[in-house]
Image (cartoon, rainbow, N blue to C red):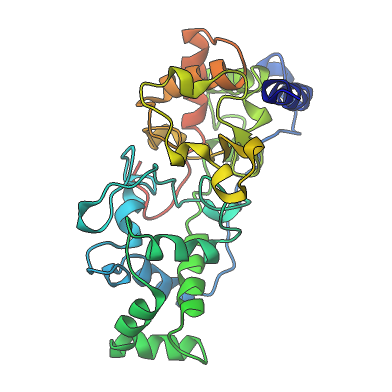
Length: 326
């Protein structure tokens, strides 16, 4: 079966689900919504979070002691470096845009191509990647073991001290604390009718009516399914740059031709502040990203006034965290 026919069937199915949940006017908003509020409390061990925080910001995890996790995932600026492609040790340019680390605990897989099933598994990727941190677990463990303060902290929390598994556990636990709770939209979902204004509510209704919620739903407004980049049109044929290996998405993981251009659907929780957009960072503005998504994912054009309305809604998804300065 032709891949575009398959995608068309999938999109129609998703649209039917979304339209069932959508409303036609502000007066008819239902409590049963496709997007759910983020939890207000995370039950995490504070001491593990603290050491994970230190490791997240420790450049010794890289081969030349110059690149930390926070280098590409800057907490103050939305959990990304705001670049189309990140760069690693020795100024090497990476192949893909760094996704936000905020709310990553709610993604069903990690990385754009879903090659890591958990946050713990994800930690190994950048550390071992030659274009990113360019290190190895043996090198990282030896460095941290040589630091008496770090060694003591690990032995206080883990019976076997500094090990790759314990490093991954600490960093992943810290990342699970990076939840942008209590957004204005979440307040509205919890019953505060005044948390968002009429324009923002209209944007949400448009978001559902156009079918955006077919892929961007759940607590993370995305991050819980895969989707084809160009499900209803060949995105890569109209892009200014040729197709790269990173553009192949899940096919790089599975080797299956049907997984070509298949990616984890990104969360929209911080979309209002996380440009540029898409795995390739090709859309500089949120307005541009919405128009491209409408054309290539939904097979339609959205009027500028509705695009602005949807942008206003997306701003209400930005929540709170002590490290975040939107």
